[in-house]
View (cartoon, one colour):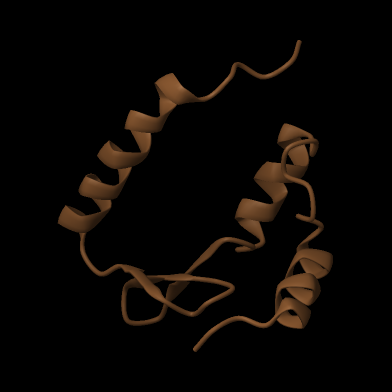
Length: 81
């Protein structure tokens, strides 16, 4: 089911993630702990918080996702100092 603009806005207001480009690393880590992006469903499935989509269902998929995400490292800028 598509996410409405209202749902998107409400989600980002709830977790304070409207502008992750400028949020501090402490606030970003807090958002991770508060499950603003992903949450673990009681049956061992990692879900996308906003869409409710299943992201990871086992450790092999987790390893593949971590490997994939690590590939983005060369594309991202270093944080400002």
